[in-house]
Image (cartoon, rainbow, N blue to C red; front, side, top):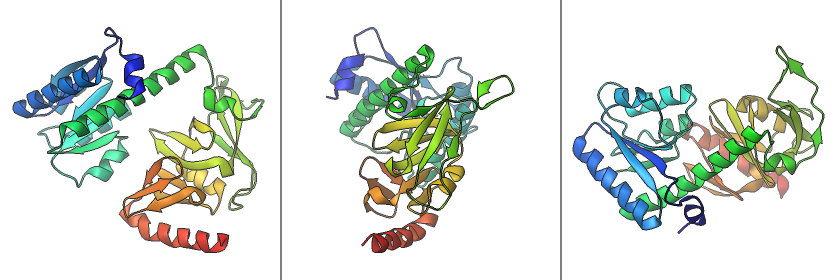
Length: 292
């Protein structure tokens, strides 16, 4: 059992979970499976059901974890998810569907997982444990922001004074290039957030991903988030990086293996779209040849 489950579940702290599916039988079966998996993993949870996208979107509070069907009359699951993201809800989203062709669309709305029916109870249990880990990270991040802390990842990098401000005096949160675009691993980028500029060595970036206008840098020293565009970052870091997907930018230095859908890196993994796969292979072979 994952340690995070033992850490956060104390019998009173319950993860709020929702199931949204237009078929009553499916809702009840999935609710029973989730409650059973929670009991087996020692996870305290409360499960609520919604019969449509409209009912889900009319709820006053969003759950911390949402199991969402895609094919529903009216507002379907993909549209409902997009509206939730536009409202800035950071619900951990898991699509449950019998169709696999929507998997790339699911990542466009920041889905945590894509569960294809039928699935084994063991798979559901595994996903719940991982979702609890993700939820714990989100809670820790929110607590740090409330206390005004910049986070552990920022503390691992040298910081410089931030004097650039606009309008009401709020610090401008974006990445600033500290090297000429296309020069590869020369220099750093400066990430500005919360009034602090953090120097991030380009060569330490394993990959970057974007969701809801927020870029997350996964580095050898941890993760760092800022509001910005992945397109701007790709122009700053040079030819050792490749845009494998609209939501992912990969450092070729850390690629360990890949197939037509996924790239496994030294730490973590990234998606590769069908449109970008051939270009990625060509760029990676060129990189390997140059390094050799």
